[in-house]
Length: 137
Image (cartoon, rainbow, N blue to C red; front, side):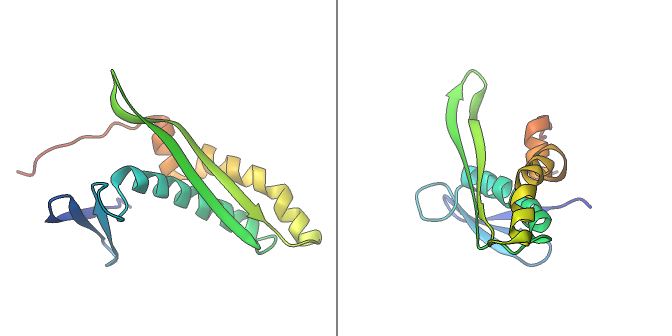
């Protein structure tokens, strides 16, 4: 499957992204409360890995708390604008008992599996996939 989104300009600095399933999200340039492009990259990273980790660990026990925080340092250097020091931190809690113990034991492995194999977003960033930009003909 080849995912595709369409970004449409609403006004200067405000856009709406649409997916093929009918979903939409407003994207801003950073001057409003809307998510900016770099924040959306972090959302995609945390969301992709979060889904993986949730599905793997929830087979053992339903979490009582589940938060994934993604951050990075925006830099401008000889390579242009980019992020460094990108980190996704999981704060996941499970209930007491055997099922919770199994889920807790699985959490580090689930995070590693997501990063090293499962999460398309993490894998794409880590592999440094080339991006082509072009004008429509």
